[in-house]
Structures are given as C-alpha cells and as structure tokens.
Image (tube, rainbow, N blue to C red; front, side, top):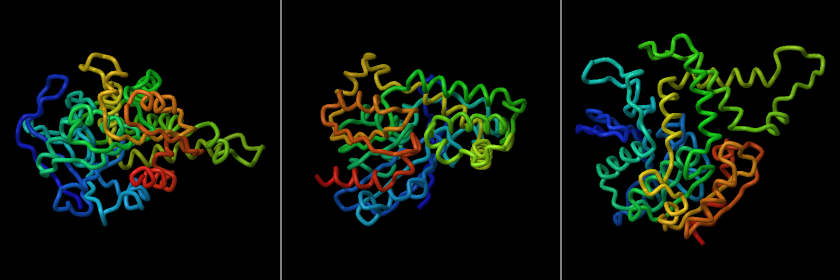
Length: 337
C-alpha cells in the first residue's frame, strides 16, 4: 500500500543546509504483529522506488520474505523523483520546484529520513534490514546509526564505502548530463538527453563483457551499422528518461560518492565494520564489475557475525535484481538456520 508521511519540521542535512520539511513516500505490505517483531525494511537502489514488491519480484513475496508473515516497509529515498522530497518538489519559500537549487545530500541524510519514518510508524525493532547496491549503503549506515534496533542484516552487491571506480563512473555520468544544453533549465525534462547518455554509461557497469557478447552480438557479419548492442543501449536510455529525472540522477550519484561508513567515525573502515554486530548475510555476485566480490569479502572479514555467499550469475551487478531464485534460496536458508 502506498502512503505519504509529511514531516513538518526543519530537516538539517549533513552539508549544513536545512530543508523546511520532508515528504516521504513509502509502501507497506502485510501487517505488524502484536509483538512488533516481524518488520522487514527494504532499502532501494539508485533509480528504484518504494514499491519493492514490483522491482524485486521473487525476493519480496518469495519464500524468504513475504506479506503473509512479515510487515514489509520500503521508503522512497530523499532526493528521488518518486514521491519523496527531491529536486522536483516545490520549494515552499519560492513556490517553485527546487530543480538545480536542491542542496547536496548524503546516504546518511537518507537514513535520517528513514529513521523519522520509523518513529512515525512506531517501529521499535527491525527484524531484517536488507538492501542491494545503493540500498546496501543505506542499510550499512542505518546499522551504524541505530545498531541496537537492527536485529539482522542482508547485503548484496554493495560496499562500506564508494570505490574510486564507482566515483569515476558517476563522474562520467554527471559529465554526460552536464553536457546537455538544457541542463539546469528550470524544467522537469532538463538534461534528458544527458540522462540517456548517463544511463548508457551505467549499463556498461551494471552488466559486463560476457553478457553483452552472449545477448547482443549480431549474427550478420556483413552488417556495418545499426548493431544490436547499440539498439539495446539506446532502448535502455530511452526507457529511463521516460521514468526518471536528470536532476535526481545527478544528485543521487553525488550522494553515492560521499558514502563512507567511517566518515566522522574515526576514518577506519575495519573498525567501523567491526562495530556492526548483527548477524549479517553478505551476498556477492561473481561477475559484478561495479561492486566486485572483493568488496563483499572485505566486509565479511571485518564484520564479526557475517556469512558470505557468492552466487554465480552472468548478469553482473544487475544480478542482484535478476537472480531472485538464487537470492531467495540463500536468504531462506540463512534466516532459518
């Protein structure tokens, strides 16, 4: 069920700027039990939304996590364009959308907003906090901020800090958006062509050489133009432009760049991870070139109660969305061990 929470007080961001209030869009599935012990909170990735039963089909609603036994919550992140406060929201001080004037945000700001929603819903404990990719960034931050409220943690295709590789990819994507002549126009479709190019860059990291060779190689050796791989990239770019916003994409990639679990906590990632004492299932995808398995292995080494599983998938980073059967089987086994 889709809901909206209005927070009517000033919200101070990590950058020091203050939003006069927040709107948080969120979905719930199932019912909270009398003991309040069946909460599963899902954190979503870059261009997803609060309807996790839609974008994580088979994982949400599968044998491990489902509304028959769990009270499932997923909130749209701060800065997105799917109902929570972001660049397309109206600035109450001007009566116009923020667009390029929306301040920089961090993963920590997103989690602070999640915590406000948790309090609004009267949730005292989260039985399972889970997220993949950027959703995992939020889940890790939340565990660091409210360690005693999170009982179990599931992370997939994620890391405790943004890598130099990830920052470089995001910078290339923002350069593509910024090269669009309409970028920073006060309009909802500003930077649309740049967003298409940014998505194209992203697709090269979400998948990998092998899956492109297998799925997008042209069978006709005589062809000199209009290649299958090119059409696929064009299609993926157009699809995102129809459903997302360049201002949010630019802003959220900046937020990912700032992700570092040890920022403000002494700077040592190993020590920061060691403070996360929840039983944790960490899942790596062998073919992932964006958040490669070495990042999950690092977490497993330094989190005291972690279990690492590496799944086999041809789909690279996107395997965290696509491989629902493997993910569900591993998660179910871990939850019931």
